[in-house]
Length: 176
Length: 271
Image (cartoon, rainbow over all chains, first blue to last red; front, side, top):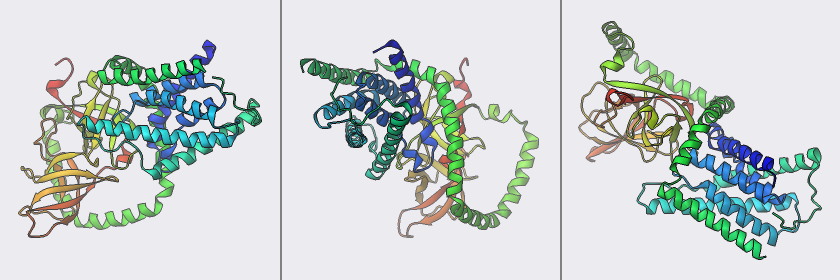
């Protein structure tokens, strides 16, 4: 991994995290459910750039934590755990780098994030803080997933036809 | 395979470590530095996001806006008399006080702030503002919109940012009174989806639609007579010890961009 890649990942992660924590909170529904950090993480894992994805995830998560409105859910730590689990799923379950694989991994990623938020809310309540549930309702999660899949589809199209740096026929070899 | 297991264990340890360090407060200085560095960019994102959100929402709610206009027109006609009397009092007041001297006479300073993030869960109504401990703010201080309408209070604070719980948050509780009265009549508590309710109002207390509800001033850092909202509908049976009323907040949380934090003059930095 080159220093340039690391610095770019940190910068892009910080900007994306800030965008998710501030800009999107002012949008009306359904645009309120746009969350770009997780789709970019999943895209990075699928393109076998887990190291860069990890740096991006920690930077973006730090921004989301620092500017979170409610009780913090340690997004930086959850992104690390998510990368671990999604990488494991990508190595053991999927067989290629297709868009369908991305959709499936994205579904798992949102599910893992929802479970993490549920656990965080439970721990906050146990510590006697008067906190209501942090995890979003199922309806909101489904809307987020729709935006995630749209976002991934656009990224794949750009990567395939504009950048020409991606091929669905390449198999996933799990190299990080 | 062994490398992968070691890598996974390392990442798992990192996750646990970050969690423990955060709970212990060791990461607080790092977070403060990151926050101070990123706040200018956050302000830009928030300003742009607010404008985009405002323009995107206007087209979707034309019907609801028309209904709202009709409802407000009918309310306006019922408050014309009160308005005329109030206007006369305002003119007299203005001639007795100089503009800008009012806040120093009332022993409250004010700090302007921008809303840089909002909660997205329907049961919470909290916002993040770009002022904090460094600006002399404390937990419990009142936050008002630009026209002096009470919108919430500070519930947690960091060096450069503070979280404001709006009156429509389900956990918000504010002591309230009638406009012009000098005693507490009930508690304003928030409900889901941006509405509030006046509760624990004694049956003997006169309450009717369109009554103005203001802060009671019984809370330490919240001045009295800050407008909160208008009574929409009074509910409760005559035999109940208390009645409740649905409140219409005077400011919608979706329209909050710039706010003012009322700070007791004694807490001004350097005083």
